[in-house]
Image: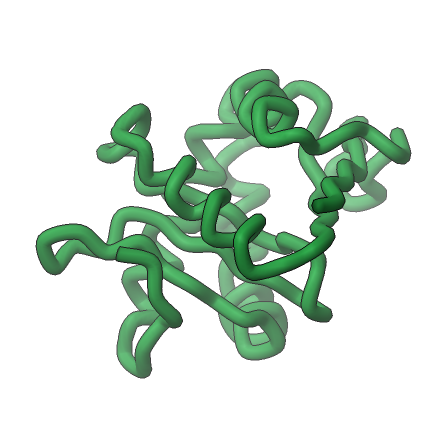
Length: 143
């Protein structure tokens, strides 16, 4: 089930964020980079976002955080549940509830890039992420 994050679930959402962001970027960004950004994400970013979770059998398996009504600022699945359709369910919810969406993805994150392309997102801008120094794509989808 996809639903809004409830009070008291931020800790689990942040666990998913850290595990998934480290796993997805392991080959080109060290885990310490993400660990250093965890508090900023928790205190500054998450309160501004509309956060929805994928819950199955009482377990939070993934989440999406939408900022400014159209930008997917975070989209993560717990690595323990990769390839179980959690990301697909989350993305379908995002596309069913929003007419247009944008997101940023690191160019070297081939798995995420392919996933977003499968849902019709197209690369609009290529730029260097200032903090990490990595190439990132800004992708867009419109109904």
